[in-house]
Length: 335
Image 1 (cartoon, rainbow, N blue to C red):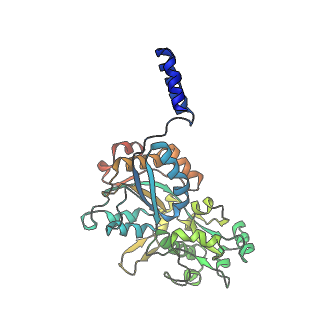
Image 2: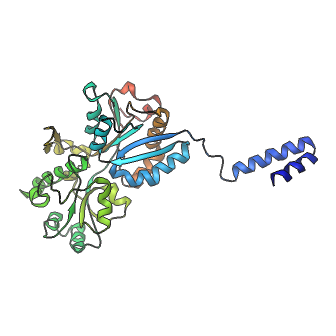
Image 3: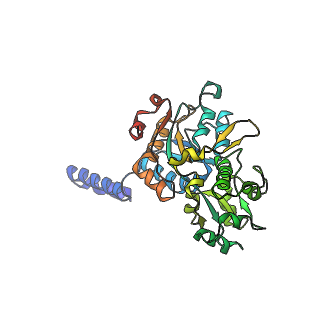
């Protein structure tokens, strides 16, 4: 077909031939809605496992299409990912954590100076997600409607509860904080031990990126999740009072009254509002791509995508060296 077109063009007056080629070129570009951005390389993003669905199925593809970069994501427990960066097993362009304190594992000379600043990206809260086909589903529905205490359902013999490892994942120790706060709020001494059976109960602990799938497959009756996880998967869930769900920044002082001591490091971790953070580590190989990705998530489009999936908006604050934050990202920082 291209040969025939070339022969026809030779028979046309020069000016008309050129005009025809311009029109054909324009139509070719418009036929698919305009030329796609040029490939600008991969952007490696390590992110909290609770964001796996939205990152892989929504944010990543949208970012690729809008910018010409190629999103390459890997999910996991935030603490575990931070240790992989520290141990030089991973060298991401962007790191997203589900706890601001995790960044401190990578800050300062003693920790390799991998991170010098981070921004608060979004917030969420803890909920109890449950399998609608569980034999305890009717009880969970009563708890969701407020006609039965949720903790009484979890105490029923045979209920299979799933949660994440506090040694590897912020949601793991946030779960411990949830039950400590619930003991006081509901005046239920010993509630944490009765339901969780110990911080490192192997019968309840699963990798963060697998927990939702295990619930959906019927291997669990219920699990402790972030709000965005159950909304993304359309799972039924039980909302919890803000006094215990770690989702209200105005209750930071209340959350800070509970704590967990890491048995391996002896470090004391206190309860705090659940905030996702984002940073560009010193390991970034595609710095321009990293800036473009952070800019995409902080933009109105990125924030709308997060909000639609239950990741709640919060004020963007900078922690660390504010002067090190790339100039294009400073527009989002709120004083």
